[in-house]
Image 1 (spheres, helix red, strand yellow):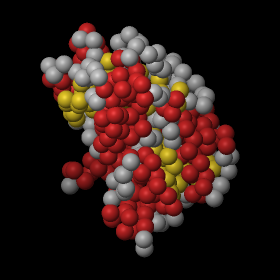
Image 2: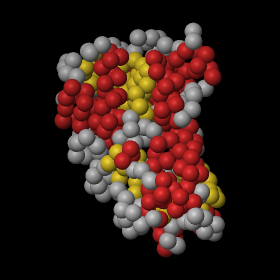
Image 3: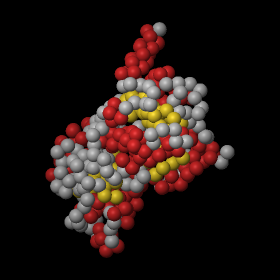
Image 4: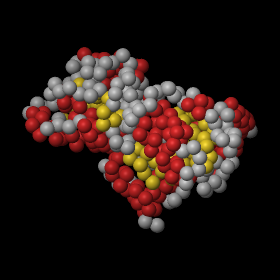
Length: 377
């Protein structure tokens, strides 16, 4: 009984928080409220988001090696370590992309690890990898702050470091690390807004469930989604907005949002796994016509999309391309070539109509068999 009471109180608090954000109202929430709600709302607009230190971005398709450079690398007996923050389809694709490039260069991969999003674990894995004397480290840092000390021994050992998504504090590109490679965050936000417009037929009421933490990648994507809705789709009203810090909390946020706004036509969620509890709440409410758009491929949501459910569309970056580009940049740095400090991959849009193609473009593999089977029905 006590546990149930606490759940009711937590839900009531969430509803109050939604109301404090100006949950619903005629004409939707005003732009100032919306843009000042999500962290880093004042990030400068442009074709590409800038890097964490204000770097201008270039496209991943501009990073290439000549056959002569591949031949040169094959004669150098180089070694690499892949030290990721986590695991899953996205990391697997990034690993596969890096492996494909390293094979062409004759570079041996001596370590691959998953830190399970624990900074201390990643620090230990860096130390372990350095004992194998790698020339290259490709990594997604778990924590930019503690990562400064964790990666410093690799810098001092002369290892060429390329980061995915985020760097670490007080590191300079071209000095402490080669480059950061990430998705086109603004492009992904814009594409999600386009999908929402498509799902709603150009008009309707939506809620936004965003990641409430200072994290550049998701901040950029969330804010660009909102900006695009405001600037490009005036007949779509954002009537509710609420953040989350833990993936598991999005179900409570969605439940409160739906209670306050039973006429919602759509919901945007920051990424795929965080959208799963939202989908469960929408199904529980029997809202079969409400459409959800989110980021990243994989998981139960893709099956829902294949079955024609509430998940209308997803946007993804290209982790296979990201991994390959990271490998190329590290190799170019070893060859003493000048490298861009901030590189972005291309954007993939996915609806039920192009699921197999989107998976192969982004992850270099087919979706799960149950998804393929559902598409054939």
